[in-house]
Length: 116
Image (cartoon, rainbow, N blue to C red):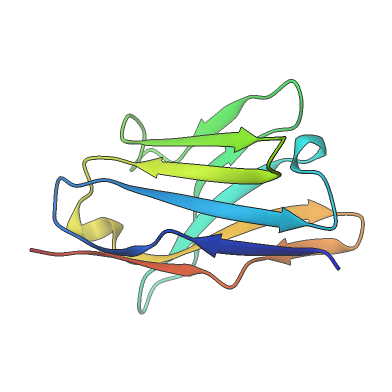
């Protein structure tokens, strides 16, 4: 069964850090571009970061450049999003996404809340 399962979200104070994890099953993350998106209440889902297959490149939304870093662990078949210098505007549900042979695949999301 192909699926993505996110974890690592939670409450954090402004300026803090979190590391999100996306565990993939049923396919190898090394062979596909993997992305993170986020959605805040009342807003459309927006792109955050992507990492392409092997050899890889990364790309980020302007709003997170220099603060977030996407990475991949092929041995563990996981993708990570390291989030530093978090701001209240980063509050959202974060989703892992890829497109594989069966189509578009989304995880269930993990909530990140940045608040003092």
